[in-house]
Image (cartoon, rainbow, N blue to C red; front, side, top):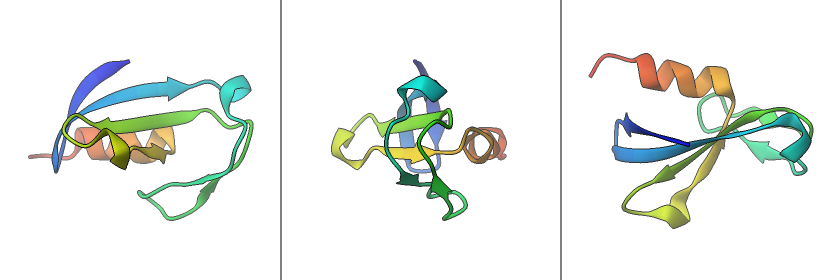
Length: 68
C-alpha cells in the first residue's frame, strides 16, 4: 500500500494480485470491466473510504502521473 494524491485529494492505493482478484469490477478510468484474475489497484480516498474504487493499473498510473 502507498499513499498518493488524486485530483480529489489524498488516497491509499493497494495492489491486488491476480490470484486475489475474484470479482468483476468496472474501472472508473476507462469504464471497462476488470475481470477476475486480473491484477489491479484499489484506490481508497482518505476522507471517504466507502468510496473506494478498483482501477486497471495502467489507468491509475495515468492519474498519478498527470500534472497537477
